[in-house]
Length: 250
View (cartoon, rainbow, N blue to C red):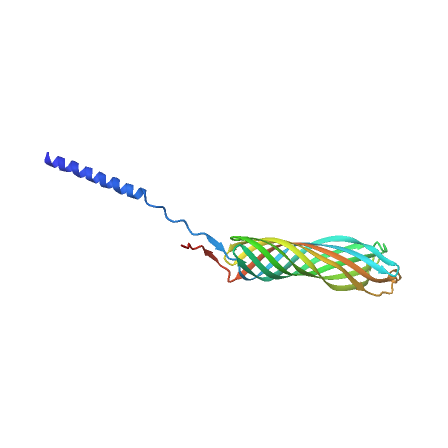
């Protein structure tokens, strides 16, 4: 009988210890959540871009009697190039400076309203942008606007519709203004991908020429107005950028 009582007491003590241990385990705090990561946009970067562009050109002929419209036309084509810049971040604000250069294939040809036996071709084969940026960052996501100077490389050709022979051509480098908007996402500590839209106001440019063809004898020069729209996908590699966890401060 004594042994039975001692065994029963031992089982009761063991049960109470197990229950206490389970209670201790139930009130233990969960493991801490991982610290959030803040993406840093500061640093020099270099990258490549490619996409689509559209050039709107209007050609006028200037004569002694006044200016005669030769017509307007739009033409779209491909763009490919690169960019280099620097950004610095203060809280969620991101400031930047960037230079961008693109090869372009934007050309348009139309029958001249000045003389329907002639046609004009305006080709843009190069575009450059020199801009400042202002952005707002949400961790690895960056929305920004940009603005500054733009430059385009253009060539005008006037040719005979029947023979296809060029009568005169002129090259010019034109400066204007640019305004754009973009979004970029950092998918790795030093790598980002984004999309950007830019509109270029290139104003008017005059080309002086002389040609023996009697159809152009009265023409003193031509005046070309130009606007360009660009949509590009961009990849950037940033030197010295990092993504760091937030540390608690007490």
